[in-house]
Length: 410
Image (cartoon, rainbow, N blue to C red; front, side, top):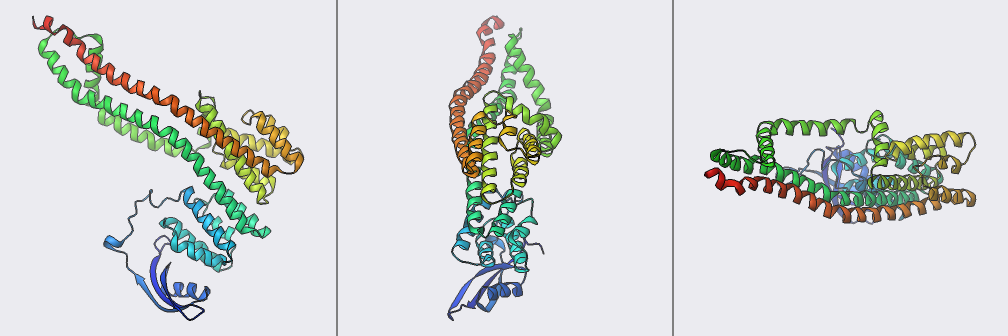
């Protein structure tokens, strides 16, 4: 049985004061649930498996409800930090999280981590068994927090870091949602007119005879082509999306695509600001947690999401290994603006690198928000003009022959 499919049990138990408590727990078997109850200081009286069938079963959509998002991890980290800070044991905190986590995949993984911790593994070692869910940034910071004895504070810092990352992603998505929706509507409207409206007018034009204006003829030819090619084109679009989804993270593809993103008008500056904000936020969080600078740089470079930043980070790592500071290598890479280099230099001189990196991240978060608002205000009228131009142009092309309809009838 997989951990994701762990069964749910209802229980009755006696707490330390002799009171009867009731609740639900997930586990592989009744004995596993009984062991968890006893480890938390309660004595089980009755344990019964809860059957979740029919209308009571959880609705699970593979790839959607089962996917663990960064937001889920941020919520989990904040809850865990709160419980540990309140004095709960790590095992008790993990057990509570397993019960109340809504995401079924994350719930199963937390159950596995709890079992690993009960057998003697550290929290970071248990998390490291699931690299596809928990990023290296999180695993290394948790390890540093365990070593330094300030795990609750590390978890809070991680939660804040991931929450800021979620907010940053949400800002970018909100800016891109409107133009994407308008573009899709424009394409659907154009295809609908070409498939259903243009053929009706084409039949009328054929019955009248005569030559069609060039714009109308182009529209009719496009309609005839689309009637034959609509399904093959749809299949090609789906294949292209699937193919791009599989290769977009390949190193050879990122080497060529990521530099182009930075050179795009308007969007290039936004991409740079997002990369710098992510780099400084993650690096500051790891240094604050006590992760060694070389290890932190390597992890932050991989987590930057941009090959240009990742390549620049590798160069910085090589220079730091040779005894240089961060400032000089950073200044050699245009991806890092002069202001960032100067503030990091101040951080090195004052010994407050993590604080300075956090301030840089906050500044660029604000810059990203301002840029996305400007993009939205700029894109809205442009997209309205685009959809109006497409639909209006097609309507004018359809009615151009009407102006000479009387000549055709005669």
